[in-house]
Length: 340
Image (cartoon, rainbow, N blue to C red; front, side, top):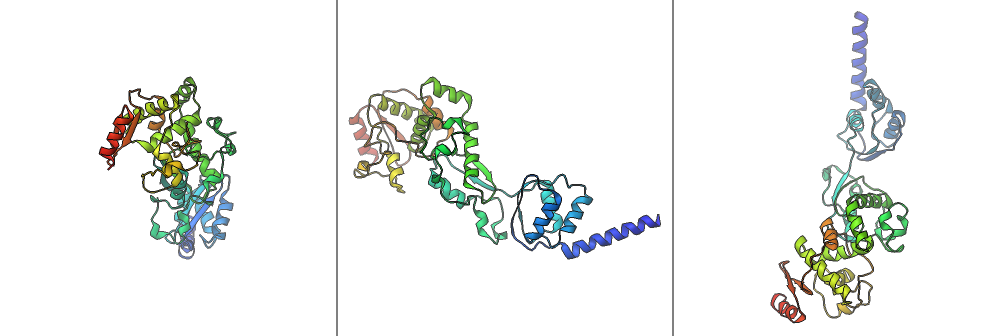
């Protein structure tokens, strides 16, 4: 009995020494554990990167708790408030550090890239960070350097897209949780995997039934996404645009001109409509050469299930109401009335 008490007291004293001398975390930043790394490797890396003074107390704490097989891979954020115990507990519990990013419907590649580099909805206390580069999700800054051909072997929904097209339209708008400072291709794969899930079998079958391609469907959906807001209006405009294509009438989509000019204003001048670009639906008939943004599921469905009407023209008022017209004369009257 006396021997047991003595051993217990020694263990408590020994553990107290650990708390006194090895508790502080001397680095602020992120720490990554790769899949398959064991307790010894993790402890050594923590010491090497300045998060603990010695690997032994960390190793001993985890071993005493018999949690060495429960250490989770992932990216973690440690601050000066962390002790080796709190660090161990975060890793045992898998309390990984992620950045929450919401990509709204209608964002284009440039806007998505800006959001990934400078997130506005962070999942941490910014005041705790010393290194503000932790805000970044992307290591590189150019999503456009990757082309459809780089992912065709992995995602069959890209089969109908031109090899040299960029990924405009296929980075599905949604809320994501990313590890910081990822490789660009890793980020794109997350987006594309989500797109793959959202494009359910019934949607793909309907596209096939209509003798359309996924690429053309997403291109049309991107026009609807930028032109009108409500699902009801999108269905009517979808019917109008498919009708224009059928009668070989230019689509004359203002959103494609805004995409070309990258203007903040939605106003389009006569000179703008004369710009020589394959996205210019005033100058060239048919669909533009590709999507102009990432459309949401409502726009995709409106593309596939248009509402047929007698209308051939429409315009959006400053308060986002859609006015439909059957003839060019009616359309011009509506323009004079609503677009003063």
